Image (tube, rainbow, N blue to C red; front, side, top):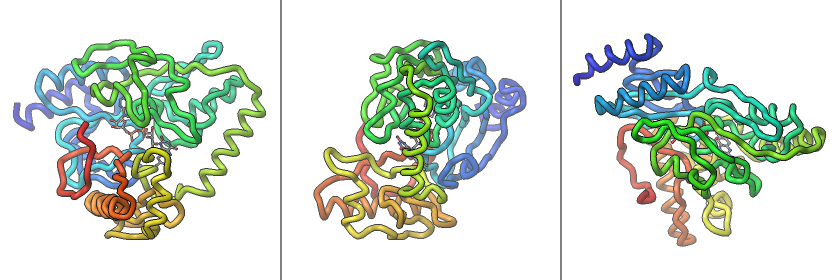
Length: 313
Ligand SMILES: Cc1cc2nc3c(=O)[nH]c(=O)nc-3n(C[C@H](O)[C@H](O)[C@H](O)COP(=O)(O)OP(=O)(O)OC[C@H]3O[C@@H](n4cnc5c(N)ncnc54)[C@H](O)[C@@H]3O)c2cc1C
């Protein structure tokens, strides 16, 4: 199917809330990225399933994004359709010690709900700026805690477009990885199992952890959080700092002067600047410590020239 006719069909399918040639810099925390051919902010899980089935039938690539806080989008943009799970899919319900959240619910909203119901176990995630769907996909974590500890099940749309319920084992959450990521599934809803706790202690813990974040992380600058995964037994940010790379800049991309684990968009950075800086950091740390830093940031969109070494999976 040619571009013109698939766009027309998609318009009918997505009831006219599809937009074309949308700059992804507007939907990523990094404020970087070229245009998506087609862009849809989803209204519901059933709409998502419909679009997924349609994209499979017509072999149009489909890319899913959440809150865009862990993404580096290519300067050349993204071919096909980008669907964003956002506030129209963000209902959060509580049933005793269980929280059931639609995938687009921000972690801050889920944390507030947990606090309102005196449920403990979610404090670690309250300052992570992503959505609950993105957090399960990435098995997000902080302060030695991770989503794996609290997720009991999730509703997913499989790569073939079928709706399934995956329990904790099936989700197979490991350090910044999941079966959802490996099998290119899409999460529509997540169930968390928390514990009853003391509301004041929960609030105090959230405030303490978020103060710690504000003091140490460059939250006022566009970024995608930690650029690299943590190598075994040592912090990547420590190695980058020790290699003298804090403040190192290529184009508009800079190794944060506040926290060496973050690359920030210091003004007008392109994806190419970030990739070049990531490759430089990776090469420098490898030559000094013989440790290969593996990107945590997800690179999406059209392929770009880079010396960055990526994992094989
Ligand atoms: C300032 C800052 C601080 C951060 N701190 C932390 C931290 O402490 N710990 C941590 O782990 N991360 C941290 N991050 C990274 C990021 O917030 C997390 O990885 C978050 O879970 C990503 O969620 P998202 O909705 O933004 O996903 P996106 O960035 O939109 O997407 C990330 C990946 O998840 C996939 N995805 C998103 N939603 C879904 C879904 N519903 N179903 C299937 N796949 C989906 C996307 O396809 C993509 O591959 C930080 C980022 C920033 C900018």
